[in-house]
Length: 261
Image (cartoon, rainbow, N blue to C red; front, side, top):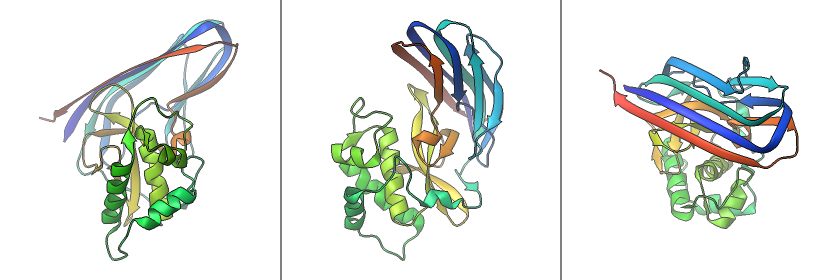
């Protein structure tokens, strides 16, 4: 069992003042079969009260509205979590995770890649997922600043490079085209930097997990925030406001893990 302490903070600075700012945050950990939340806190600045709800996938959503003028927006989430092994979630399958989505649609290039990977129908789903991940890891280069949050799986495949979001989208596209239910996950890994994306796949009544960016199954050490069909269902922050401005984004994340005593 692992004891995890995390602190995630995002600050958006605007080049001019804005107002009538509505925002929605998915940045909160929650209890599940392998993850026990000990403490959890979410703050926004300028300070206002937050409304808490859940979306259609069960992810915790925090939302709010800032009417007065402001030239920055900052939010932070911090807390403590206990992780147990293995990473398994017992759930009834939502069949929506078998079908293509906006960022995971399998175009001809993805279909050709999937058909070129020789899969044995007699192997387990986990073995099939590992084979798909191994091929993806060899053909897609991890390369920051070459894609955007709007890059699709097929676009990343044509580029031959991307970041964790692109690895996850392409992995999901390959899994679904092979008849395996798969979903996108956002969360934290140990260290400092940014949030991470990985994939959950469905086998025998359980969701299991693989990190295609690092090409390994996940058993321990990952803190889950949200899941969905693709990135669009799991975005950490989105909002609308009145004002024409440029935006500067600053992100800080620290995640420390220790063995529980």
